[in-house]
Structures are given as structure tokens and as C-alpha cells.
Image (cartoon, rainbow, N blue to C red):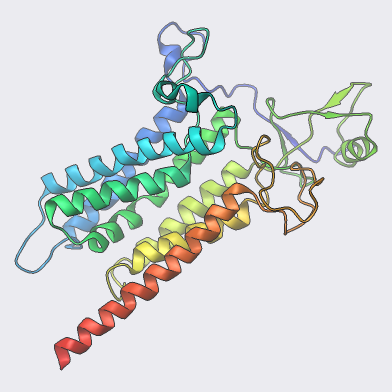
Length: 328
């Protein structure tokens, strides 16, 4: 029988040097953040050299560029971590013990790093950081935000690859031949008829086991491609053709929101949150049974689409009025 699935590679581990004292603390996910920020800085510096951050009567400096992206990164990490622990965690432990938000050890004292980072929290935090920086340095927010929004999407590719290497944020079950069995995914009881039929359809032998780990969409890789590579390519190609400041920022929000909204249909929602909106409250989060079953991420992405569209409309109207006043 042909197997219509792929086993998650056994040689992949979250640690870069598994089992090696001290070096075992180094994780691929953390290294992916280094790559992401490095590429974002390189793309931002390229735009700086092209004159994207110049304004009449005042030139931009590399020191400003460095402090701008550093401020954005610090606020991004703060927002990503705080949002993840307070919005996506349902245990309530961070509300009663807020110092644990930035505590990188588990209850047994084992190093775990800061597990759990929210993209939407990072976007909010990064935006606040850019606003604060532009206010202090008296720079045009949308001019600098446009450059940043053009630079950062490729970083998501590395972030999602980090998720894949961690074997986390996997997708819903699938019969596609590239479906993958992730070791840490929640198994299903083989006493359920649809589970037995599903396993038979993909060539998965149960051998009398009480539980079956079914193949899932490698949704981390889908997101790495569309939210990272494709979005970056679109914004990068349009960076010199934007009609007004704010256009790239709005387009980034709208496109990321649209890509992520669609890909959430393949991604597994958080088990403790489930569907925020569901046409069928009893629907399994492991299966995509209705387009009307929406996750927390999809609701936030819908708001991103609205915000991005609003920014394009608002900054476009303002730019048109300024042009009219100059011609008058």
C-alpha cells in the first residue's frame, strides 16, 4: 500500500546540539530569530542607501537606522511575549505570577527559553516601538514604518522554519501525500470509526494500537512561504513605486492578514481556545469542516485587513489633499 504521508524526520531536534552540556541550551528557534533580525536589518539598510528614509532638509544617519530597528525589535519581543502569555494562555498563571512571563525556566528549574511568542502581539509591540522612536526623533512615522514593513516579512520565513524544527504549530489532519506525522501531535482513539477509516485511506497501519497519530498539514512551511517569501517579494518589488507614505504599511497589514486568514484553515487552532466563532460548536479543531469555524488568529487577521485597508485609504486621502493644496 502506498503511504500518503511523511514521518517527521527523527533527526530533527529543537536543540542545535542535543545532549551536549551547556550547548544543549542553544535552540534552532532562537537562532532563527537572529537570522530574521539580521535579514530585516540588511533589507532596511538597503532602503536607507536608496534614499527611502530621506526627507527635505534633513538626511538620515546609520546611527538612527540602528536605533530605529533596535527599538522596534525590543518592543516587538515584549509585545510578542506579553500578548502570548496573557491572550493565548488560559491557565491564568501569568496573571497571578506575572514575573513568569520573562522567566526562562520551568517549574523544575530546567531551561526552556521563552516558549510562546505571538505574532499579533509582536506587531502591536513593534508598532508602538516605532511610534515612540519617530516621536522622539521627530521623524515621519509612515515613511519609516513603510521601510520597516518592507524589510521584515522575510524574517517570518525563518520564524516559521523555527516552529517546524520545534515540531510545533502543526496543521490539521490531511490526506494530502505531503501530510506529516508530528511526534508531539495529539493522537486519536482508534475506537472511533472515522479515525480507522482515515488511517486506512492514508496507508497508516494501526496494528491494534489504542491511539493513532494522524498526518497533518505542515502549516509552518505554508506560512513560511506565503507570509514570508511571497509577501516580502510583493512589498520589495513595490518599494520604489508606492504612491504615498503609508501605502506599504497598509498593504503589509492587509496582505499578511489575508494570507494568514486563509492559512489558518490549515493550521491547528490552540486546543485550549478552540474556535472563537463556530457554525457547529461540536466541530473538531483537528478538521476543517466549515469555513465559518474561525480561530482567534483569523479574527485578529480580519482586524489587520481592516486596519491595512483603512491606513491605505486614510493616508491616500491625506496625500491627495496635500497635493491639491500645493497646486492651489
